[in-house]
Length: 431
Ligand SMILES: *Cc1c(COP(=O)(O)O)cnc(C)c1O
Image 1 (cartoon, rainbow, N blue to C red):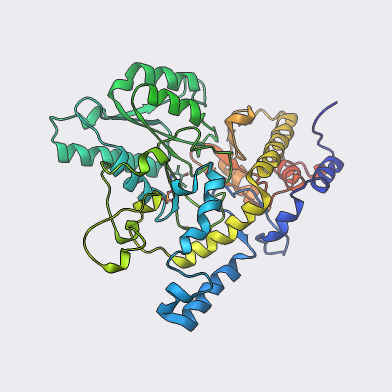
Image 2: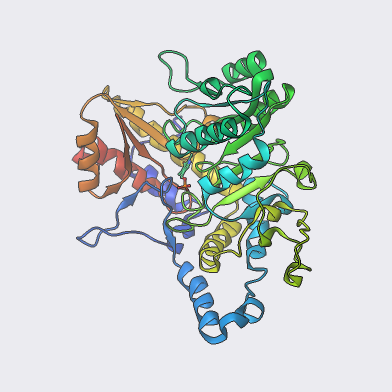
């Protein structure tokens, strides 16, 4: 018996039997000019707005309106400790202890701040290992960290020119094999200061084995950090247990915190009380009890909060809090169960069509991918993408030849996935 079927009936029943089916109602789905809802498959790029988000933000606007500065202490949710409302929920989503996570700044800023603590090159150990097709911002940030340290240390200390190791897939392959990452670290590890990988590659949709990569890095004395932009709210993460040193992510993709949402960061418990770590400081990292004594003796909060610099943007935290409450209610494990089915269904439909022009470059194994499938179109990709947009499918195009689609378990349905496949293949009878 086949697990999936392209019959309309199958999709209808899968939606009917979906234990998370009511969560779609909690989101605002964009509509086309004709009033029909779009098929939104871009939650990996910008998550949709929770309906509840407005009231979370309005509460803070109201408290500001009626209390002014007194809101820091007397708001319904006082602003001084406001970020603490999000801590446990963020920890659950990332598989961390509450003291290991903090929502602050934005992704690339957090990358730089944490690199200050965790990338400390010296003559012998100065290289950074990344994926060759890492996200551009990560490339710029990592290269600029290398350049910065080389300027400070002097060019005779280490060679900035060969400090970046960019790992490519084997010839003819799209995914990087874990065993190849392990072999490279085993071979060159002594000169590698930091292994910096994505949790899920934004382009190929490949999910990396964070636990194995971390283990391989530690075995050779390297630090292991991860960019979880495409993992947080998508994959089941166990950052504490996997012994990851540090990680950063954004909250506007799968986590629906809104455009440009405040970012997230993780620092493993074992580093939290290490006062030898270099760190750029601000008053929001200082001990909460004595912060307002305003003296100049810095006492760090013994948690990831000590990486905070400024008092945080409450409106952004409120927006994110609305979405985190929905994740709390749905549960990451439940979301992942649905997500695996929904993406496997999409893969089934695409493979059944047997269209030679479309190649799925995302791995087929469920542990090697999240929601997203990246479709390489051998020809006419850009036109196909434009046609999809014209027919009410929101997905995205990545040069030179890839369309990324991500059915998200919180608000996408099996019926939408089926309709997408029909539209992609220009198969009107499909409905
Ligand atoms: C989305 C994304 C970013 C974006 O960085 P911002 O600082 O939030 O603008 C960076 N890196 C990766 C891997 C991403 O997927």
